Image 1 (cartoon, rainbow, N blue to C red):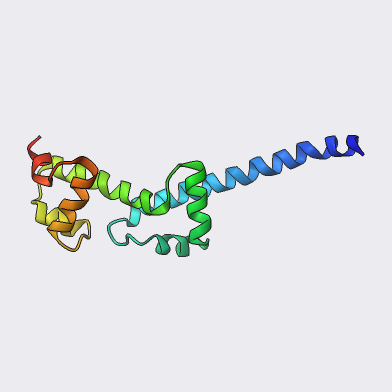
Image 2: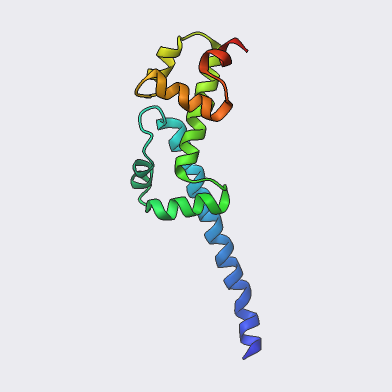
Length: 126
């Protein structure tokens, strides 16, 4: 009986590795979708539905493999783009606010201040 389990165990381990690889592929796909659509849609449910997977499962995979939820991945991408646009200095803070889909400048400023401790204008000057 023990010998039978030893013979089966490599297949079980291989199946688990394949499952992890499939989850990582899904997370790469999610990241590409966020990179493409983060300006249009910031709702995590949108991405879960687009991928045909439950939000709970998607969040669980993200936490397990990346240490982040779908919400955090979207927020991180928005922050990255906001910092890029603020540092380029081509557009006004108001234009950046609406380009990234924020409701108003105050909300955008709170978002930036929460991440950096600085206002958008202070970031622009630095």
